[in-house]
Length: 119
Image (cartoon, rainbow, N blue to C red; front, side, top):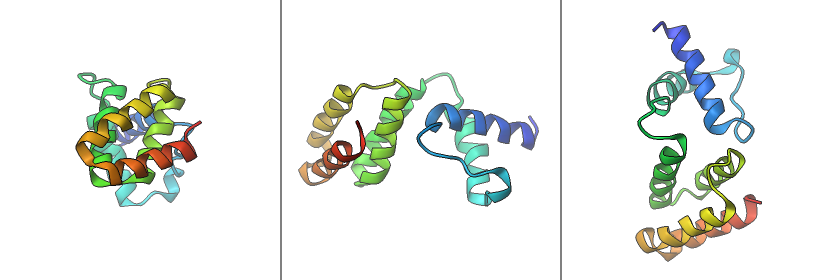
């Protein structure tokens, strides 16, 4: 696969994962970080069909929760809801489950961001 094909696949997969929730800057405005992210993370990892996008998103939500990244958790929750991967009730249940593993201080922050940002 050529670099251009890899970038195009990365863009398509990024749209499948985040389209409508996170905007991808136009190609002319992307730096090396974004180009690498598209060419590797989205074109090579998210595009694999062994796990669904929903499965990968749930894994990422767990990792993000463990790191205490509330804003990123909110983005994942909004994308999961927008893409029909999770319901609001399932997102709330994920936070309830995560509290047992990441602790109440982190999970309460996740809960707050979900309440504020996820319809």
